[in-house]
Length: 444
Image (cartoon, rainbow, N blue to C red; front, side):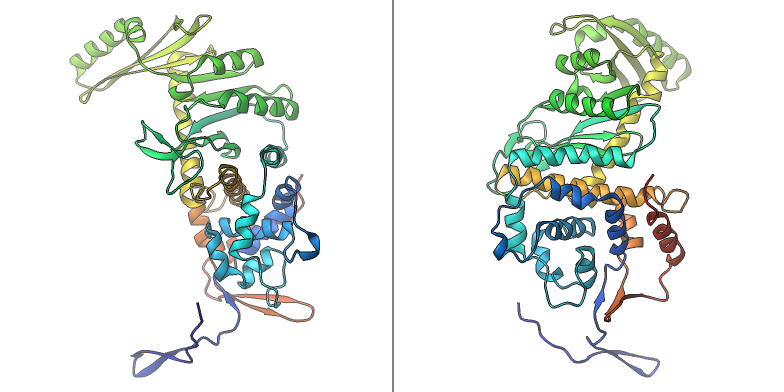
């Protein structure tokens, strides 16, 4: 689209003074705070790790943008809220985005175009994608260097609606839509993503979960020898293969069970007691017990926690299978229900990092996109880790982007220096400076 040059724009007067605007302010960016992300990437080598997993098959004599530059451009753009490759048309000359891609901000060389980025996303094969998945675990170990008292893994799936003709887009009856069905694993205590696996839309919730968990458990045991590992999941992952894997590997687990007649029959007395107490007091009642149970598809008996809840809205029964010896109520309220916190991490990944924008035709390209968005999430995660003790310590990634990254700035470049002039009235100057001071020291 051809740019129209407007010399002056006139607005309503202010106290009898003319209000006039022009487009002669110089090289200005709205993403000045992205320099913090560049510092984080320099410290944790996130984009370098991504690049090391890929292979550039292009004829190097004809290459204008090297692979590392393209990776930096794409990941930084996603982190800054530009999830579409189409955004590159307007961002190719943005001085802040150019700096994050390690280019001089006012040079004549533009960043990669949308077609170049699209070819980049469609290039990786399955072998490269597996290596890239391993880099996610490497980054986890790097960002969690100290001995851990316990590692809690939360595994969950989410829906990703598809539009158009996309490979392996399938109709899922539960969600009532054509979709992909990504599998995600998070460290529950820190919120760091350990795995992001794209699956066909009609895949069962537990599809590929045993193989993903087996790979993660092997890596975690090597990195943190002797550290107990706990797996938490909802009833969609209540399948014998996961139980057997955890028991064989010495992993603790608390996994929901779909309610059925046999389970209800075993907790009849518990529900009756709760109902009686509710009738006497008129107050909501919650009671817990445990028993051994063996489903038809199980090869052995396992411990099941039962919850019976009576309230004005009606009765509610829930069941959890576990190999932990913890008391029933303490296990349910203190361990199992807290897995819901991971839903907030998934929300951030999808809503604020746009990880559900998987609009490529090829399935491997969409898997690659999912991983790129997950690494952008990791970049934002490292930013939040450097905000402990501040007012933004628990802020959502959208809030972090708004208050620390989306900063207007004028950019100047001389022979020896690149100047970034932020607004004098920027309200988070002290926090921004403190964050930079925390990022700059070498890790460890």
